[in-house]
Length: 147
Image (tube, rainbow, N blue to C red; front, side, top):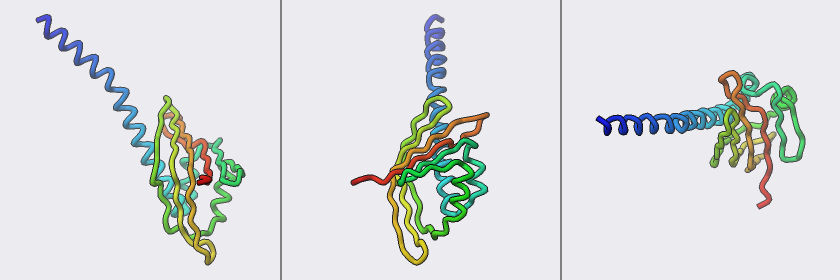
């Protein structure tokens, strides 16, 4: 009888300690899916979808050091007329800190701007925050590697 109580206590303890790990795995999967969704919206110039995911206080910093708010970035994006042939994230790492997710990785884009082909390879950092149960993109930073 005593062995059953010990076994029951061990099983309960194991269930309690694995629950946060499962929740964290679920959050990581959600963030990964959102990053891919944002990438698809960017490729397809889906500004309405983009606007729905960006936080009202969103800020982005580009390679040249310029920064845009949410409205400024959406306006800037509406004028971006390049034909994006490839946009992908070949490398991505997600770190969770409570209701904040920090995503770092490599961004690759290739296409035609005007009549000229272009190709970009950047390092990026995206910061997501969970607000009222929904993940919102609050900041992004892009930089070109020196090597």
